Image (cartoon, rainbow, N blue to C red; front, side, top):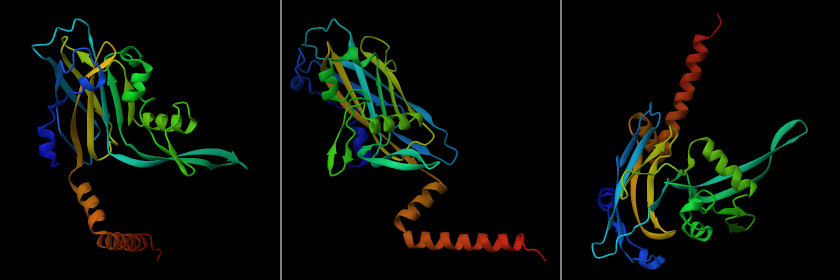
Length: 263
């Protein structure tokens, strides 16, 4: 789907309440939007925060819901393969003792909610809906097998911790604010080293611990300027890029030899 068509349907809902057993089937729908659907990364980019805002609309024929809604927003960046290594000190030096490859995992992952996730839904629902960093699917290659392991697995814990330290994984359980019983907003922080690509935003509405409805939207992070020119050249004109790089290295070495030459 072309980007402009994808963004045009960002406010449309995928009402799945009938499939997940909500009391008033398809009684709610979500209308959402993001403050910026195209984030440009320049050489002096230092990060920014987008704003997701929206509202809960109910079917006029449905009975009024008298409780409070819960909202969970999951933002996932471009997927890629990554490796986590475990180092050990042997003979006075640190070496890589073991490693684990994570397959097709989000390069960026932010999960926001209006209150702690254990108050939003039961453990079974959280696992099924992948709510929270502990429940997100992170497939690993373990020998010849492929599996997602428990959250306490040392490699999984280290992977999540390292991504969190770089601001690329986060879980905030009070980041969604209900301005009224049906109007809400939340921020999407993007660090300086944010990966380039398309970001999917999944918004899930819960009522009395059950999924009432959900919707999706997206935004894109792109490079502009000289960095984008270099990236495109390296990707689409590899031979020319390699020759130019080699020539620049030779010229730099020659200039350095002239400048520092001793007579």
